Image 1 (spheres, rainbow, N blue to C red):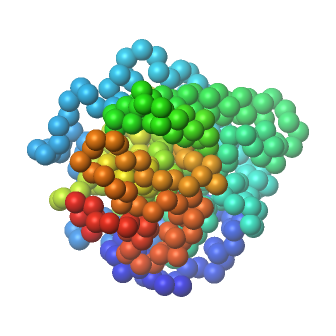
Image 2: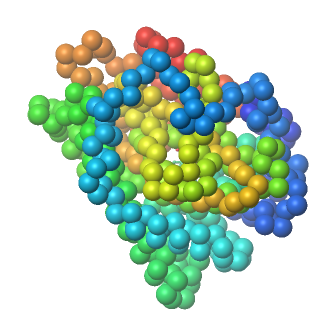
Length: 363
Ligand SMILES: C=C1C[C@]23C[C@H]1CC[C@H]2[C@@]12CCC[C@@](C)(C(=O)O1)[C@H]2[C@@H]3C(=O)O
Ligand SMILES: O=C(O)CCC(=O)C(=O)O
Ligand SMILES: [Fe+2]
């Protein structure tokens, strides 16, 4: 395996026992120290981007006005909040189950990303992260969680109903946000072509829920909850809880911004395929999760993206100064395959499908 040279990459080879798709998680609860298999050197050292708290940073070249696309989501009742807290509560119950119960639902080799365990892409890193995870597409909830609760009792039903409600709320929000993004880009449905594309994308949106549990950590400076990455799909909703942990990378100068632990706040993370779809006008964002000494943290990122067979083609607004697509059309699986091939290099998969230079650099 190739070892990346960037400062956030550890340099020792992966522990062999962690390479299986269904590798069991380390017993975080019992850990009094961070074992070598989970040590990420250099993560929080001076050579990486400094960390600031949201609100403490100043940015002169960006305007924060009331016309931002998400502006009118704030009033009214965009999201049923009880559904979100119920889902969080049920996610916590899932992770509190005995290890063998969770292990019954382990990812199956070749089973894609569904199941309990490290997502395949993250397994390629030589070190493990301080997290447990469970990934599933919402239509599979009932089948998937029979593996955890084979008796299909009350716990099973409570869990499944909570996840289904969470799915309904997030999907509705995703559809509304997509409409706002299209409007903001001047691609809204007034003209026939734009409207048709918008509808086609909205009506075929696929979603994936990834439940993360980041256990409290005896040495948070030497561990990583989730290594820096961009999401590959269109966009991701990340509900915030009182325990902070999500950090976003702001560029030029690079610094990690800690998202405050505001319960009920939803962060929208733009992914690579939305970057492609909007022809680079919406940028995908690097983000990561850090861990802390005191508290467990649960997150439930909700990923929205195109169906596997949809070629994502850059949308170029009529009458905009920019007149040609700067990215090649790709499907999600094609994009993942490119990203996978580039693992261990410092080359972004977006660069690989760029056909013309964007005016701003992407180094
Ligand atoms: C729908 C998705 C989105 C996935 C793949 C699949 C299921 C799991 C998601 C994550 C979650 C953790 C980071 C990431 C980078 C990973 O390795 O698995 C994400 C990835 C992506 O956004 O590319
Ligand atoms: O837990 C978080 O805040 C980030 C999760 C995330 O980025 C992911 O799962 O892709
Ligand atoms: Fe992410």
